[in-house]
Structure formats: structure tokens, C-alpha cells
Image (cartoon, rainbow, N blue to C red; front, side, top):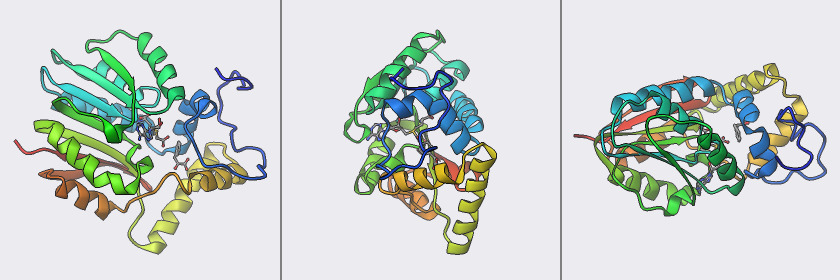
Length: 250
Ligand SMILES: Nc1ncnc2c1ncn2[C@@H]1O[C@H](C[S@+](CC[C@H]([NH3+])C(=O)[O-])CC(=O)[O-])[C@@H](O)[C@H]1O
Ligand SMILES: O=C(O)C(=O)Cc1ccccc1
């Protein structure tokens, strides 16, 4: 645990007024409080993690790889390892934050499920994929440079075996400004209900402004179809947080 982190691992990062709010980064301070931060910030996070395990159990194929891109502390990898019952699988979690990867490795070491989980520190925009039946990007694409998103989706489609799936969760922009603004208000209300103050909500919003760039629902759908996916569906949505399931044709 990093110095000065209270032992309750509660997210208080934006609770006092900061002279200048720095760009958000996945550093030690964030990694120490990440489970609390994501559970209190992302509506439906626990349901999505559980659903990723259930969907992957249906689509995983023997003797293939499963990727968890931007794995943070390994929640999706662990959910899949617990729920998939297939042989010869290897789950690979990748994240480019050293703070996340070291803690994720510890989390994974503490469990012993059927399929092995390997954690790698790398930039997901630069990796070579092995044949995969399930690829998960749970709230990661929104942090990838916009100019690299199309190429990454094409690479992911190419890596999937026929019948394989991409599970892509994202915070999205809603098409109409009035609806977008109302749904953002609903999300902020969700954060208030989870104990965040107006100051915390405002300062984190500023910190994320230059690092988390959101696409609209239709941009995601068009990009996935252009990458070659034969079917694209939303399987979960609460407010502006949605999860897509995209299938590579047989
Ligand atoms: N280029 C990159 N390469 C690799 N990792 C990256 C990159 N850019 C960002 N990341 C990593 O993507 C993760 C995004 S969090 C994912 C939650 C997790 N999926 C979960 O199911 O708990 C989402 C959030 O905090 O909203 C962080 O760990 C970054 O270090
Ligand atoms: O907190 C927010 O406002 C979000 O949009 C979600 C989030 C959760 C964890 C890290 C970064 C963003």
C-alpha cells in the first residue's frame, strides 16, 4: 500500500479542494482505493463483472485464449476464471499501469481456479494477440487515444476465432444533448447517493476531462461493424454506462 493511504482503502482522493486538479492517472493512490472507487462510481459495475463471467462461460472455446484488456485489479479475469468450465484455456490480463499490475498479480496469486490467469504489463494498443474466443474490454477503450480505436477493434476482431466474442463496456455519450445532460445528472445523483460530495464529483470530472474521451452509442456500433463483427448488442446499460457484446461470425 502506498504511503498515506488510510487502511480502509476508501476513495477520498478528491475530497479536499485542490489548487490545480491534475489529469487522472492510474497511479498507486488510485490503485489502493480502486475497488471502492469503481463500485461507487460505475452504476452496475458488480452486475457487469458477474455478467462477463456468465457470458464468457457460454462463448469460451476449449484450447483458446481469453483476454482482459485493461484488467486493473483483475475483477473480470477472476469472474471468468470462476465461471468458465472449459479445458486448455489461458486467461491473459493486460494493463499498462505498474500500480495496477502489481496489485492484480497479488489478487490472482490468492486464488486457484480452473484456468490459469497470466498478468502482463503492456500497452494494449501494441500487443500481438493469440487466438482468442473471448476478449473483454471493461471500461478501457475510453482511455485509449481516439485515433487508435478503429485499428484496435480490427485487431481484436482478427484475433477472435469464429463464434468468439468481444465484451466492450464503456461510459457513453447519449445522442441528444437534453438526454445526455439528464443522464449525466442521474449519474451524479448515483455518486451522491454513494457518499461522494459535490466537490469530489466536480474535481474528478475535471481530472477525467482530458483522459477519458467518450464515444456515442452509434460510434461504437459503427466501429464494431466496420471491424467486421457480424452481430452487435447491448446486454447491460444503466444511465450512461453500457456494455456491448459483439460476435465474430462463424
Ligand atoms: N493503453 C493501455 N494499455 C493497457 N491498459 C490501459 C491502457 N490505458 C488504460 N489502461 C488501463 O485500463 C484500466 C481502466 S479501468 C478498467 C476496469 C477493469 N477492467 C475492471 O473490470 O475492473 C476503468 C476505469 O477506471 O473506469 C486501468 O487500469 C488503466 O491502467
Ligand atoms: O467516476 C466517474 O465519473 C466515472 O466516469 C467512472 C470512473 C471510475 C473509475 C475511474 C475513472 C472513471
